[in-house]
Image (cartoon, rainbow, N blue to C red; front, top):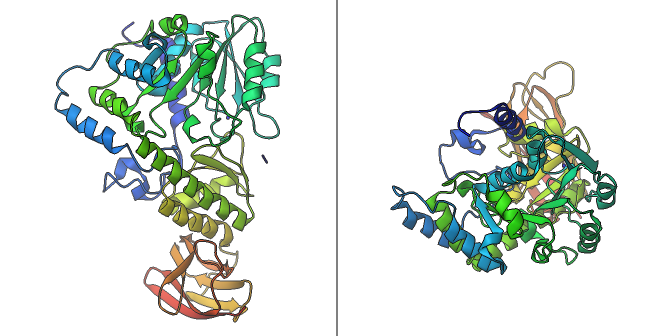
Length: 474
């Protein structure tokens, strides 16, 4: 493979729809649950929101601290100073920028500006769906066009779906959750082929991560005066998801309509200060991209090792086909402390955000543990905990480790070399009583073949511990 004060009925529909969209099931181990963190800085294993694992830039953190002393004073009401900075960064006029509390507010403002009952929005599926939900909340119709066989947004089919009622076409490029891009030549042909009166909104939240030469930002069409609105954010590569800052880039005419219903003071003083300097911290941006490249390589190599198909990614997340129903895989990973996403009518796929390199090494081992460890076989509960056999032993290519558990609980199986150094974790998950098996292919945690020699297998569950020597001969 190469988705006025008080609350009105419309506001109620909007809030209900967004809450249902943002709900994330399958939250696992305590250290991966932000609402129960013992260490508020410990988000290890939260691979579900496409966040920057390196955090904000040092410049942004200092700016936040400096601005905190002025937290008793209201911020720049409409983020005018930040809008000027963003305008200078992109080489456009400040009247073409609208800053909001995350891309979330900006997308809502766009919907409120252009979509009314009887209007039509066309978007892809699967894709990030907030603008589609906002359209429905505004009484408009949302039309969903499937991506093509290569998991790329199908611009030809979207163009064919345009009617006299079409007001907005919503594109997410790179797309979320598929992490694919629209070829720049296809985008150009599409933009120029659209009939008058249709606005194209392009969400470019992940465009910094793209490495392909076949991609271009749609800002160029804004500069040409075409009816294109580009949405960008500080949440991803700049590591300011918690600061909530996003913005739109569009002609002054469109921007005036976007800002016409914006409430004042939605972006805090500290967030404005952080974003002002984040744009200048190229060292942090380059470190983020380098870390992402290494993390993605670890994931892709792990998928190849496990024989899993995946959709090549141009972002900081990736979709992998685990070859089975993804729900129990997600739940087992959650039990191990790794929170990933599923959905989008892709029942065998996980969406995994990149973390640090160290997180990705551990996650790869956890995924292998979940996918290669058999669940308890039906039948009588074994009489004792332990290893039944390691076969063959000595082995050349791979050996099968058969073991039994007599109670429900976490089981770890770890391989050590003769010096006591950890070579690889084969299993680390909760198992029910029964017979189980796991395979070792003679490779370490980086997927590299180990040398011939004697290795020690350590099987642990609670207070029970069993060791076994394994000999690898090549």
